[in-house]
Image 1 (spheres, helix red, strand yellow):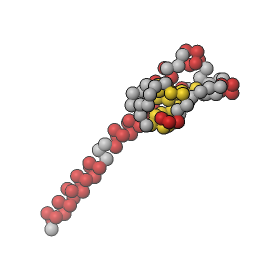
Image 2 (tube, rainbow, N blue to C red):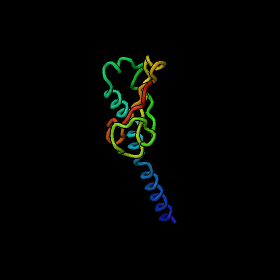
Image 3 (tube, rainbow, N blue to C red):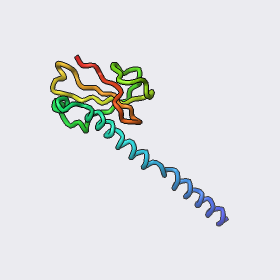
Image 4 (cartoon, one colour):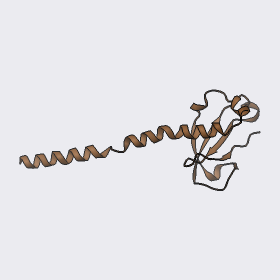
Length: 116
């Protein structure tokens, strides 16, 4: 009877200790990936464009888009899912925000939103 309890305890210990082993790596990737996307988009802008950005560019939202939704494509299709970074500027009322599409696997700029 004691042997059965020890075996069950050991099995439970093994199951619980390995079930979340990869969890921190997934969380770390989710934290750092958006910053890489933002940085690639921001550094693709000219100094004049960078100077018009309102707020902290490091806090800009990164959204998921499909390749077919990009209005102005810079290169041929690279992947199904792409990331969009939208920078609010002091000229948004006149031209609209700056929208840049980035390939999440390479951080290359693959398209833009058209501004008025």
